[in-house]
Length: 427
Image (cartoon, rainbow, N blue to C red; front, side, top):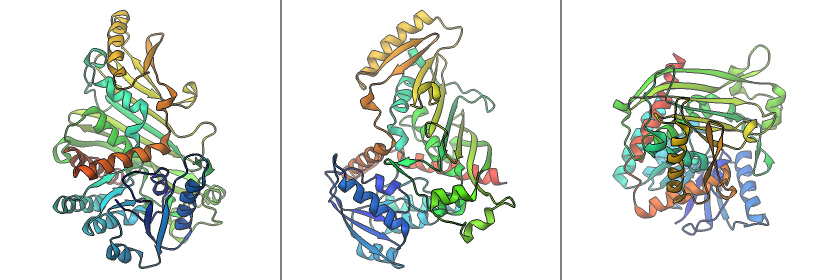
């Protein structure tokens, strides 16, 4: 298969090419406008080609200029297109790509507002007609503690079943903290200025929150179809801004002043207000869930963090990633206070043997009234490696000619949840 990259404005486009794929021709066609984002993307891929350990062998053929999209459609120089960049035109790019006969692997979010969601519905309908696959890059499904949280939740003797709980005390909680300034592939990230413009990047409630909503569906209802028309109810939604000083803006974008399109978000004190934070409380198939995304400028220590809790009738499965965990995500199994811990430990020992069939080397270690799931280092491959894992999975679906039956309706349910929550939060 031949790979095409369309307008790679986000570094995630390059991360897809951090490894080679036996199914993919090393000659890659790139269509993009001229500018620093294209140069940054090409430089990052060239860095992968030049590295000493496992260098890649990508050969880039670039078409740039104001007519790049028309040339992309006319040339049809590939089978699979990767779309990772400015989200303002992403819905348009997706529709044009499917219409041109490409399978589409798109970075999240595929829709940043209600209009974008409607376009996405049309794109999936068109993809079905043309027998093309459309898929988004859900890297967090490949994080080992998330995989194990899902695995233990399927074992009734340990987890029981998911508690419905209440809107004020949800059964599922997922919170993610991210940082604008950080390292990617060992070097400081350079953000395009539009990354801080919610009309182009999308607000936080429809961006990173996409991953969290996806995990709620994927973990709590594995293999089940979620119908957004009947299975989703938004209970509450809120949003708030991250404040960015002119000095911080210059540091991360390498621009000495705010561009004109950001002036609308600059406050009287000179700070930029970007609505990158959001929280959604909703009910899905009768179960209450809460997801929240928070963006700060940079971490004092550590990096991006994740918290995830699934509450069962026999135990809670909780992922923590703080100082106590040395900022590495760690899964805990926590039975209730009234539980018979000795009986629970026996049941857990049997469950671990079952889990080890899929994940050899995984074990548990008792810590007072809870158990920590211990994971060999080989499973901690890192966030950047997950892009290659998603791509491998997508290419297997392309070769097979189909996605799992639940993937498309659940992608629609996911983007309905985020965009409907945004509309409610704004109102």
